[in-house]
Amino acid sequence: MDNHDERLIEELQEILSQDSEGFARRAVVKFFTAWFSSCPSPTSCSLLMQSVPSVLSQGVADLDWEVKLHTLELAELLLDKTFPERLPLHPYAVISNQPHTCHAGENESDLLCSLNSLVDQGVVPALLCGLVDCDRPVALKACHSLLVNAGAPHVGSESRDEAAEETPCTDGDAVCVSVCEVLRTLDLDKKLSVLMQSSDHIYNSPLSLLQDILTGGSMGYIEWNSQDGYKVTL
Image 1: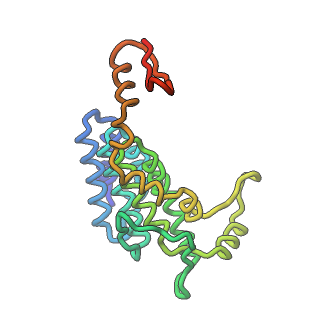
Image 2: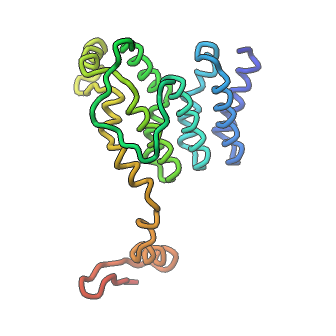
Image 3: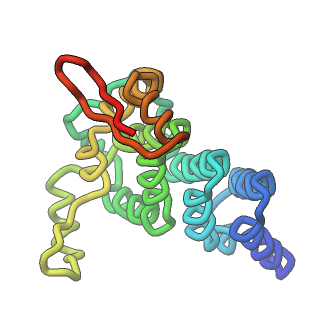
């Protein structure tokens, strides 16, 4: 990349962080995604790769849900480039609790390096942030991506133990675990099941309607009475 590309990246990041128009920020993230998709390898786009953590962290924290969704698409693209053997996940697929160990021909150290790289690039943090996002489409996108990643081939327990011994934690009280182990503790299947349901079963209830009325009107509170039902006090 030349100086022109470097200036372009700086300008795009400035738009993403400072522009007040949502459509401009969406366009920036989509442009980065298209740029990365045309990049043959990370080594050939080193300057672009350096911008990944910043783009992901800013995009996933944006107030516009479409910006966040496009950011997760960028994170998913980076996942696909890291694990090209990943298969698309069916919306109702269930991931087995049994760990998938590496095949004989797989290089376990390379897999560990790839997972660490995804963390350093901000891909895994962005997906975890999206998983707890208040916007349902964003959380769904993150959950799908994490489920596929959790089902991807990864190192067995013995290799993880060896890796932990080779790279001890700096904090004596910390517990070293692999990325896949963390993903499996999140109960992503249950999270996906909840997200796949219509929001009506949560929000379209008598209690939520009363709360909306109180929020839009005068101050008051709601209490439950076993005989009379909901009682509104103004």
